[in-house]
Image 1 (cartoon, helix red, strand yellow):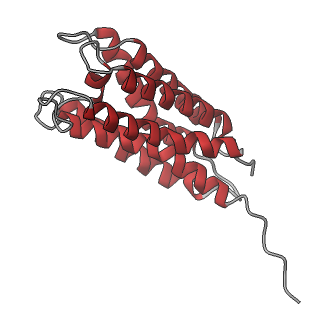
Image 2 (cartoon, one colour):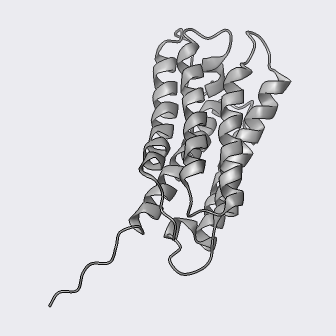
Length: 199
């Protein structure tokens, strides 16, 4: 089985750091009325946000990390790697098309939707069969992970106007940023050579 490069470990590990660190720091800079449970991540990078560069930079960092991770994930099937890269590019586009001061933006909604769907679907498209396939790329687990991520996306989409929209988005986006790191670690754990027999 093909190996995951060390830089794939770094990029996949940095994605949740950028995302969670970004929304934590950016939320701390907002006025008193901001609520991380109610308000979305996009609001932190929106044109009306205080120090919007924090969340904008974090989103660009997350997107770049996903692109680099997709290049490194050689144990995954090509379709999964392509869809992970599409998700990363869409996250960068989310930063490029911020929410306006008032209302919403159709371009922002489209690229945000693409990012959430792509980052949920890539595990189901990245599985492989055969000897030596890492546990994180086996068919059953890959499909279960995608179903869980899609369910979290659904929770967020259904509750967009709910008082807990921000919480739902953070759970969904956080899970999607963590899974590539888990997948990489699972693949790397299978890279170790077998122990030499003792005499």
